[in-house]
Image 1 (cartoon, rainbow, N blue to C red):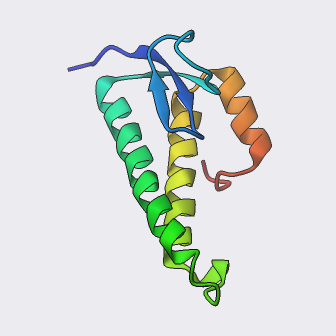
Image 2: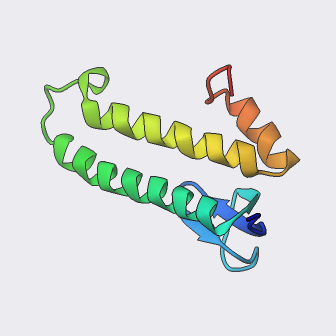
Length: 107
């Protein structure tokens, strides 16, 4: 069964997924099915949880960033978010994400 795609507006910084452009500020316009939006929401929720872990870990000054599993997890998840936005986004979104050079070369 082929699910119909709808237009959504995404703000990565806040993790917002909006159905209308005028609700709030947004950065990326995408076309996605309900299932794809659920996957994207799960990634945002995962990063929100990781951000809290990082907040508490930040009070342990002797752990360096590059030795921190939570930071690695956050980086991996945010890369997955941008991968989904690249696949689902309009040309402007694709161009912006390409200019960020955040995705692996095989994307």
